[in-house]
Amino acid sequence: MATADLRQELDCSICLNIYTDPVRLRCGHNFCRVCIDRVLDTQEESEVYTCPECRAVFQDRPVLEKNRKLCNIAEHVRCNNPERETGVFCTYPVHSPVPALKTCLMCEASICDIHCKTHKSREHNLIDPTTSLEKRKCSVHKKILEYYCTEDDTCICVSCTLAGEHRGHLVETLDEASEKKKEKLRYVLQTLTTKREETEKRVQSLQERRSEEKEKAAGVTETVTALFRDIRRQLEELEKRVLSEISRQEESVLLSVSDLIQQLEIKKDELSRKMRHIEELCNMSDPVAVLQEPDTGNLCDIEDRERHDDQVSGEGDLDVGLISETLYTGLSDIITGINIGIYVQGPTDILLDVNTAGNNILIPGNMKTVSVSDINQNHPETPERFQDYPQVLSTRSFSSGQYYWEVEVSKSVLCRVGMCYPSIDRRGRQSAIGDNNKSWCLWRYNNQFALRHDSKLIQLPDNIRCDRVRIYLDYEAGQLSFYSLCDPIRHLHTVTATFTEPLHAALCVWDGCIKISGGESGAGRNLQRDR
Image (cartoon, rainbow, N blue to C red; front, side):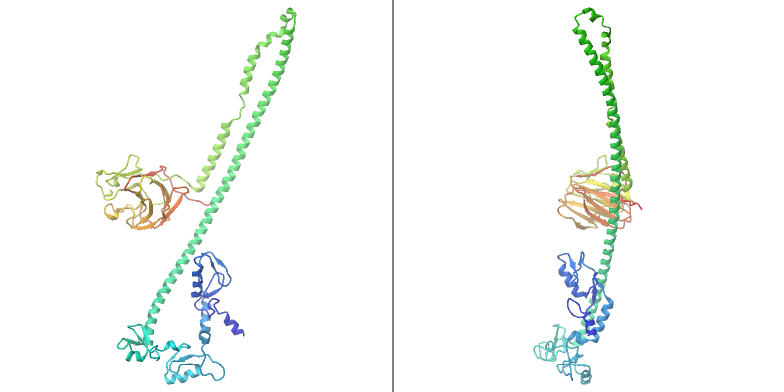
């Protein structure tokens, strides 16, 4: 019972037979490679993969790892227990059913190890145990199949070769034909094994890349999160500082105004007293008493005092300019800190080299615009000049670092923008940017977009709206990226290569005009993590 239970552990839960080429999922369960591949293929449309045994969920198609120890155990059990696979028993058992070792085609009987020795002496045709003897006979002559017709690719009997429809055909013995086919199958198996190993290496490489990208994204996320956390802290401190300055000025102004109010209250009381005195004088009937009143002359200085009070009232106002300056200086310091933290600068200054310009394009004095012309410009012929295409290179080359520059393409429906080596051909069919292995470009044609390199196209989706293009170069990383500056900015494609020469900006226009944007020189963007 213990042996039977142990053998059950070697059964694949899908086909219920002993494992064949067993492989293991990440959850730890094992299956025949063919069985689990078939299951995963059916799950592929739903993009959710599950283990048939424990229902563990995998977001990506799981990589199948060969279980070599289990494979060896299953093969050992299969070899020592043939009845496990065939279910065929000896036709001549003595007492109880005995597993068959061979099947005799001559006797049409299955025999065990003991009877097999006798049949060997008779030189009968023995094969692996089977119950399907009808498949081993000729359907026409009902004789054992012994030969293989190479012209019709079918197994035949002796009568077929002598008097049947295969008479005169080139035939081989089954063993010969089988060995030839096995040889072909071994070659196919070797080829498939090599391809599978290459595929496994590719999967492993992509898994490593996925891990690297996840780690990279986590690092950038950590950097950006820390940056925003620091910005919020600085903004909170700036807010406290500005509000404190407002409160300080408010307290000072209110104190000044309170003093002024107190002075005016005193003045108001004085005026009220003088008004009562004057009213009393005005109500006197004795003219001598009115004229002899000594205080009437003091009333003349009221206007001067009021003028002085008006001047005092303009002092101590809230200094909005100082508050604005404090706020502006604080924000400027924060922006400066951000620039240092993520190293952001403007687009690289690109000027066009008229010595490389084709004869049917115009380049105005700012050296940033290219337009096509029907009139031959008759430029002096130089080795650097493009002879057959309306294109031009930049004066500046890039052999290290990170840069980006932008191009307005809204006024041209047939143009190319990109970068190339200075060794690009200047005449001939392969001198167009994108039509050789020394240039890469974004090609716009009839409102469609494609990446072009060495005359090969990578077609971009039809729904791209792109009037302004950004080209970003990371020379050391070997990356050339193209972006559509719509809202929001859209990544179009990134070319990965090992650059072997300096790179020049390259423009080609067949209609309208295109224009380089920006003008400040500087490097590209680089997120720097605090270590």
